[in-house]
Image (cartoon, rainbow, N blue to C red; front, side, top):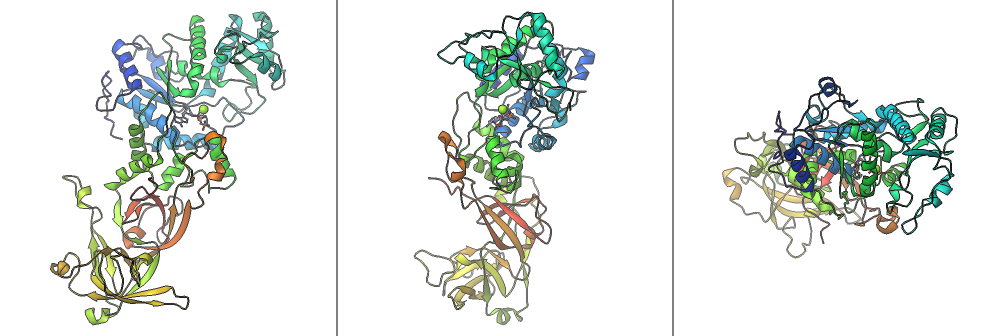
Length: 610
Ligand code: ATP
Ligand code: MG
């Protein structure tokens, strides 16, 4: 990332970026000094500021709060780029915080993968990932003690009560959009009774589901989220971080505002489905500020439209189903929209950041076409990925006059081509060394580059036609050899000496086309995985459809190809443009020197366009 060492912490730090409603809010807050009075004290996640208690007026703090119950996907990438990007641009901090309030579903494996994903996406962790002196990532479970005290405070102040209705009674009595709720018979208990009951809950005296702690707000509120939402529940479950310390756990809607406030978050940015939760978010923080448990001003919640991408499902549950039912090879299958999947597919952090910039943030839901994502990858790799030749559907081409032309059938001649085209080299940049490969009597060509009887307009190899082997010689096709079944087993041609690319005679014979090829002598066999979209339907899970029925049966085709030596020498994760085919990456897991494995990241052109 090209973040300056000391990003300017001014109100116009977003200059040069496309503005959006969130940038406008932040710039206004910075101008008005909304958070200028704030002393970064009392934040358990922020030891340095706690120690000094100094105000830090020019800062914003955002957070990215995943629940560690699955691998992150492209939608999360949007949220990461947004939250870390805003912190970077305005000289602030973004907290990676694990929202680990759900003991049953969470796991350290997911925690690790999320940290990896955020770092890989390219935000300078030390610079913007944490406040000075504090240790990111943050985790909600660090605040369970505070949350418990906050709950006792609400009880003492008459803002919460223990409800012993059955879940079914609670559901019925909550009412619905047209019907106000009905007060629980336990709603009028005294604070002392409630406190005693709540402590029994904490002390493990009651079974899961026997009772819950509810905020006491308004059972007739038009916003159902304010009809005495549950804030604490009993779960006799081991937590991956706090072990068996607790058997009561805070509900997400209660925990989240407190996490934000304790970490001194200024702008709490989330997706639109939380809009109806905002009144409770504000209600809770106001109560706790009243009680002196939290400092003013509180963080504010802002909502933006989540990413909806065509041909993709992003629900963690559905992604887990694809993995568990072995529809894909794992969370990092290159067809998965997970960050590990995209990475293995050949996506770069820069491509995903470009994508996040390009789609922007809005307040209304819409669909982004998958080709927008692919376009960002092409754009990023265009000037970076070294070129190379690969033959994906090989048939042997024999240059029958080779010995006559060069003295021996075993004669080899070195050919070179640039690793990057001239247009990809920035001014002042030194071009990478040329690729070198050998031409000999036999080379591999694409099966589709020969037709014994050419269709109309066909310019490649057919008897009598003259074609250039790219970077090598011009040749004239003479025919082919077929097996008993009629399949072409060899194509024959004559080399025309003196026509080699880059020599004075190169243009002495006019070729109708240039075709890609790989030498039999120095070409290396490679496994090439031709990935395509995982779903054939642009909206695989729209309207309650069974998304599994929309799986694209042709989303993976594995071929045995030949690649030129520069490709065979690839490092895992290195990206290339296979000339004429698209962008490919040496597989992170399976590629090894001597045993090349490549994944197709994206074709050169959008082949799905209408
Ligand atoms: P899912 O609904 O697939 O289980 P989630 O939203 O529950 O995902 P979280 O771990 O809660 O997953 O998400 C962490 C953050 O990422 C949240 O702030 C959430 O708003 C954001 N996020 C999740 N999905 C998207 C998306 N498609 N586009 C943008 N942001 C998203
Ligand atoms: Mg969520």
